[in-house]
Length: 279
Length: 279
Image (tube, rainbow over all chains, first blue to last red; front, side, top):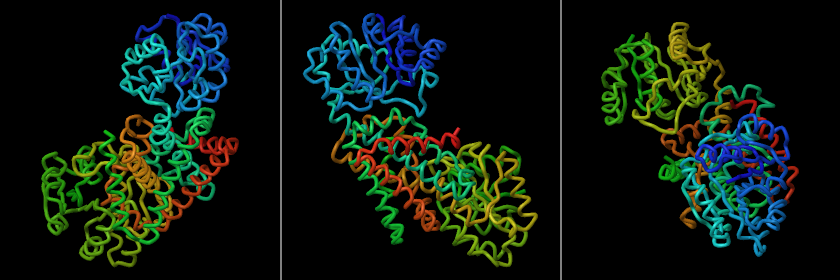
C-alpha cells in the first residue's frame, strides 16, 4: 500500500521510519509546506518522494496527518470531501474540536482519530526516531464513527508498531491528556521562565543545575507552533488542571509561609504515591 | 586514610563506593541510626564495618556527614567540639543555617561545607550508585573559614571523583539551589498531587501518561525526610522562587483565559531559550 505522511516532523517522520521497518509499506510520499523539511526527510530516507497534498492524496491508500492541530482543522474537511476509498488518520494531541468539525460529514467514516502517547521535546525531521512508538500507547477516539475497513487498517498499523491500544471518547481523551501531558508542558515552560528571569539578575544561576532541574524543565524546549494550538483547542480542560495545580502550589507555599512543617511533610508523603504509577 | 560515612543512604553510599573505587581509602566505617541500612550497606560492600558515631569519630581522618540537614545541625557542633585533627565535611543541600551555627566555633576550620549537585529521587543504601558524581559539580562554600589542610583534603577528593569544582558563599549557594533544585522538587510534588487528586474522580487518568509526564513528576518520589528540612532551612529563598513561579503560571493561565494566543506564543518562545542551558 502507498502511505502519505502530511507533516514530516518528529511524529510524522518517526511513523514513516517505523512503517518502513515493519514492512507496512515500501513507498512513502511526504507532504510538507516546509521544503527544507521535505528535502531533509528525503536525505534521511524518511520518505521516498515529496509531492503536493493533492497529488499525494490521489495516489495514497492511507494519509497520516501529522501537522499541528490548527492546521488539521483547516485541511481535514476538504480532504474528507474527496475521500471515498482513502483512509485518513491523524496523530493530534486534542480530539474534541476536530471530531466536532467532521461530525456528520458524509465521508466521516474514512477518518480515524488517533493519538500516539509518545514524543520528545524536539521537532522537525532530524528529530524523527526509529521505535519511538514501541510499547507506547495509541489512543483511538470515537471509533464507532469510523468505517470498519478504515479502523482495521489503523488497528493493524498499531499492532505492527507494537503499540498498546486504548479506545476512548474524544471528551475523555482531552481531559486525560490535559492532566498527564498538557499540564507538564505548561509547568516546564513556566519553570524555565522563572529561572531565566532570575538569571538576568544573578548571572551564574544555571551553574548548579543538575539532573533534577533538567528533568522538570526539558519540555520547555518544545515548539510553540505545536503547543499553542493544543492549548487553544483544549483550553477548557487546561484551565481546569492549571487552576488545580496553582492551588496545590499555593497550598504548599502557604504551609511554608506559616511554617507548618507537619502538614508540609504529609503533602509530600501523599505525593510520593506517584510511585505506584511511575516505574 | 580512614573515612567514616555518617548516613549510608543514596549520597553517603554513592560517595563511599566512589572513594573505594578511586583508591582514596581502603577502609570505610559506616554510621547510621537505621540498623537495617547499616546491615544492607555492609552486604552491598558499601562500607567495611559499622560503628557508633563516637567510635567512628575517634578512628577517622575524615568524616563525611551525609544526613538530612536538620540532623546535621544537631551533630555538627558537638563533633566540632572534639575535632582537632579530623576533617568534617557535609554534603547538605542548604548552607546558610549550618554555617551560621558554627561560625566562630574554635574548631570551625576543621569543617568544609560541600554540596555535590547530583542525586536521584531514590533513597537508602540500595539507591547508592557508582559514578553518581562523575562530571557533576561540587560546590564548596565559604572555604576561607576552613583550615588549609582540611580544604586540600576535600579538594583532592573532588578531583579524584572527577567532579567540577565551584566556590560560592553560603548565601549565594542557597539562592541558586532554590532556583535550580528546590523549586523543581516542589513543582513535581504539586504536579503529582494535582493528578492523584483527579484520579479519585477519573480512575483511568494515568493510562495515557508517557515520558513527558514521567519526566516532570519523577522528583515527586523524593523522600520527605530529606526534603522538608531543606525547605525549612531555605524557606526564605524557596518562598521567593515559588512566588515567582506561581506568578508565571498565573500569567499563562490568564492569557489562556483571555485567549491572547499571540502573547502566549511569545511566552513559550521565550521559555525555549532554556535550550541554551540544557544539552
